[in-house]
Structures are given as C-alpha cells and as structure tokens.
Image (cartoon, rainbow, N blue to C red; front, side):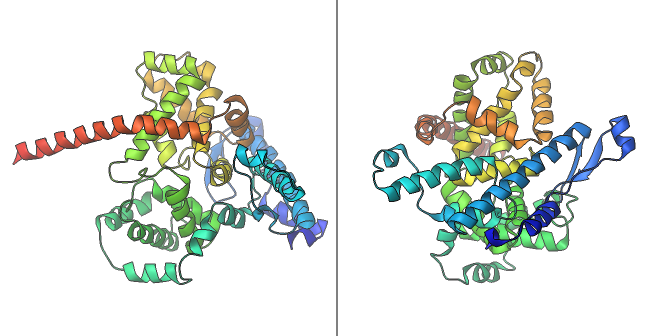
Length: 398
C-alpha cells in the first residue's frame, strides 16, 4: 500500500515525478523566453516567471501527494470509493455515525480533488470516481479487444476524418506524434466511433482522447474514460453531427456570463463579440488545446468528480481574471488575443480554480439543466432552418 512506504522512498518518487525546472543563469539574467518540457511531455514556452510559478505549483503537488498517502495509510488504499454524498437532500438525512462518516469523507474528497489529484494516483482515482470502472464492468472483459479487432480495416467517414486528424493532434509530442502514438489514438477513436454511431467522430475528441491516453497509460482505460465522459459526464449531443449540444452549451454560457460578469458581457455585446469564438474550442476540447496540460488535468480532476458544471465555472473564471483588461478593449481581435495569451500562460491551476469556485459563486447543475431546456428549442429551430437553407442551395445547384 502506498501509505506503507518510507519517507525516503516517497521523497525520491515525488522528486522524480516533479523535477525542479532550472533555467540557465544566462536565461535568468536576460529574462528571455525559455522552452521546457512539462510532466506529460509537452514543450512549453514561457518566461522565468512562468518557470517559477510551475516550480511553486509542483511543490504544492508534492505536499498534496503526502496528504493523499497519509489518508491511504489511515483509511485504506481505496478510502475515496466509500459512498459519496452528492446532494443537499442527502446531507439533511444524515443521522447515523456511518452516514456522518460518509459526509466527512465526501467533504474531504471534494476539497482534495479541487487541490489536485497526485499524477501517480490520477489514473485509478479517475477510473473509479468517474464511473468508468462501473461502465467497463457491465460488458465482457474482452470487449475492447473484440471491438478493435472487429472494426480493424473498416473504412467510414469517421475513420477517414480520424486518419486526417492524427498527425495534427499535438504535433511534436515525443510519444503522441509517433507511429505508436498515432496507432493507439486511432484504435481508441475508431473503436468509440463504432460503439456510438450517433457520435461517430467529431474533431476535438482527438485532443481529449490523446490526453486521456497520456494519463491513463493503457488504451483500454483511455477508451472507457472517453466513453464515460461522452455518455455520462457531458451533455448529450455535444459531439453529434450538428453539434446541437455544443450550441446549447454556448447559449447557456452566454447567459451565465451576463449574470456572473455583467460588465464584461455588456462590453462584449457592445463590441458585437460572440463568446463562442473562443468558448466553442474550450468546451469541445475540454480546454486541452487552450490551457497548459498540467492545468487542464487539474480541471479534469474536478470535472470527473463534479460534472460538466465545472466547464462553465472555468470558462467564467478566465473572463473574470481578465475583466479589467477586457473592459479596455475596442477591437474583437484584442479580446481574442487577451484570452488566448491568458489561457496559454495559466500555469497556476490553483489561481484559476480559486476564481472559478470562490469568486464566480454557485453555478449548480440544476441551474444549468434549466438553462439548457430553455435554450434547446431555439437552437434546434435555428439548426433546422440552416439545414433547410443548405438543402435548398443543393437543389438549386442541380
């Protein structure tokens, strides 16, 4: 058990996972832009301040790992798998000491996850808490291998698009951008495209699946994480052909921005800036193309435990963090540049998540569900009108 390891062994393992980044003395003096590799193999560009932030963050992760291992030592290796409290109504009925213990574990776990799951524990914690393990247990053990063998060599519009996107998925990554990496990613994406023909394949899923592969280590576990994400965590229809779910999410986000950040929303409206210009990629790729990988995975830690509302919290936080700067803009291009620069250099996930959950205020799953139901009819009407126009143009061209 992890909790039984000696302090020396733990220290050595943590040090190996989170090496201290040390720019050269010439770089420090000149304060030039430096390149370095993050924990998951991505090349990152930043200045010395960014390096210092990353080192501080990695020290916090080391401290968090010690907390997790202490809990495993005292409560057992899988203490977080005890029944969790998911609603206020469950809290109200807690009376017995057993249920009070369950509540205490739930509160502890929620706080711990928001502070970050140690990378070495991330695969098993994600797999258990997300529901992926339960989903996998409902099918034969050979399901994934049988699926990949059954679809091998088959050609569909989805497989053709996947083959087109493979070399464009995190190009330059030391493993993903290799024949081995491409083959693993292809099997996961093609396999899922046959599992759910309604989704098939949508651009954006390549980035999500690629990052899952890096975290989960095995294709099969990455496949099941992708399945639980699309089938249970995210809103339905986000990745279908007409992206109706994604369009709904963008409308909901726009409404939430107006409520949570009214000054920003009013300013953007005056400039005729459509938030979907930046937020569509955030929601489709789950921030994997926008935020540094270590920050993205901290967001995913919370996403797999608390659900899709986390995406709205984080998106709102990005706007909130740059409120003063955004209010000074006069061009749409300036807004996009500010947001892109901000996301690409958000190396401190604690700063982002503190704003997301402490300064934005409550954004409940129930509130989001009501907003989705409100927006869905209008979105479907607009998509239907768009389809009719396209069909009319095709007829005219004949």
